[in-house]
Picture 1: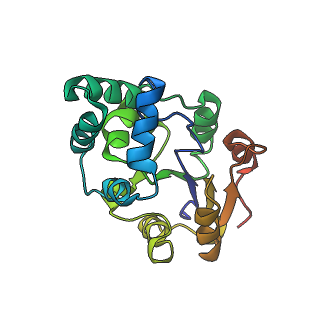
Picture 2: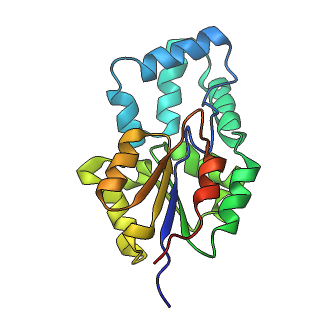
Length: 202
């Protein structure tokens, strides 16, 4: 039996538009954005490569926000577990599993695997989940090494494998490897691109 091609689907900005800490009051949410997502993103990037735990990050942020850690932690876990993902997109992915090995591939934090995936039962739709927190690398590191790792793991034909991602850089990296990439934009969302993901000819 011929190995299936892989359908890689990104999470943040592709399947989901929700944000961590979105339940905070606007002024505190803005402070989080400044601390983590400002000009110096070294701490954030270290977190997304396994350098910090969610507990450590929230402990640090609680100090900046003047909030009790326990209160911020409860809010963070709640927001991570209640992220909204398109049911239509997930059902389309489920329907494509006969033709593809489906992989959720994301530059993300431990909280996604710990809270979001089980709460939303994402492993019911994906054969595998690649999270940079546990991979220790981003999609574009070493010329797309993480894509190559999964293509090799499943012996998948790269020329018939697909990436759906909102990152133009990730899409270009995957195309450089020989795969097909569809970029999610305001005009063309993940559902539209999934509709294109009929098996490519051998």
